[in-house]
Length: 388
Image (cartoon, rainbow, N blue to C red; front, side, top):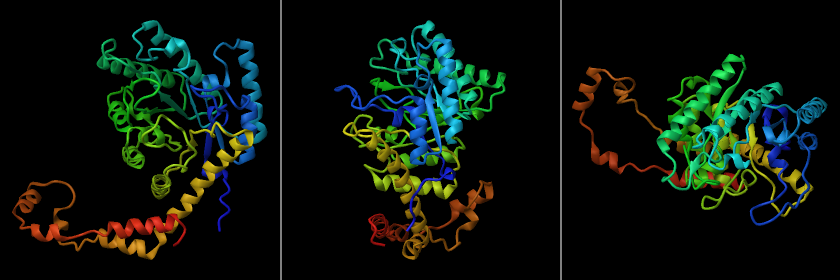
């Protein structure tokens, strides 16, 4: 049996905010001591991760002096060098500070919108300095509780204007950088604009540089909307826009839980892993989650190891699914094609349309054909539960 140990080629990453989570929540104070960025890098190296990602203020506090900033970055770089941990992605915190109480790029206050651009440009500089090739935007407070005070149409224009500005900034500085937009339906706002990956994909097409902008789908966020995460990822992949991915888990009916990957919905996690491995996704596999509040530092390490271990177990299960003769026989039956209608396949032509309109179908026979999805699903369950 595979030992399920993470290796650099798996490209497993965690954020400073994930393993660094202190267990605080709206109802209770921290239960774990805060770890420094350097300590987190060494922790990730210990558990076998490949990379670390960060918000600007995860690394450099928002009120740090220039001298403090330089020392923090110097120490962080040394920790990366000492451990071999890399920085594939960075992002900006545009939601924690009171200045962003009404959003950042969509705030009704033009001074806040300008400050958000100022802060993001500086954060982009820092991310590029540390090696990031992907820059994520999560609009944590880009939304509203009441439509009485904020225009959804104007907010969309403001968000597009900000992204167009930042694309030009990256191009002007010759940064080798792509942007990835992360959707979420709600929390901390009552309604967050562009709440799903599909909405983000539609929005990207309206930008000045759509080739630079993709998506960063997050499993918990799509589940909060009651959606199938793998379907969102497949849509993004098909559009050539899967620039990054956030893996975690979530009860569909709850607040944003950021649970250990695969711990809540292992079947959904299986089909997600199977999709990524089948299509050959080569990007980071980022775990945007955190340990239970009940755990201490050893539990944090167990959480991180568990995320990676579950992914690798499900990767092996996906290979078993693809090699299982009974499963593949059912799939062949489901997708059977006798070739009799091949003349109607492919692109449109007037002759093809005319012939198809004239063709006589046996509608009754079409309605009588069943598909063995129950058998196929049970075989999948058997495989996941370890009895195949």
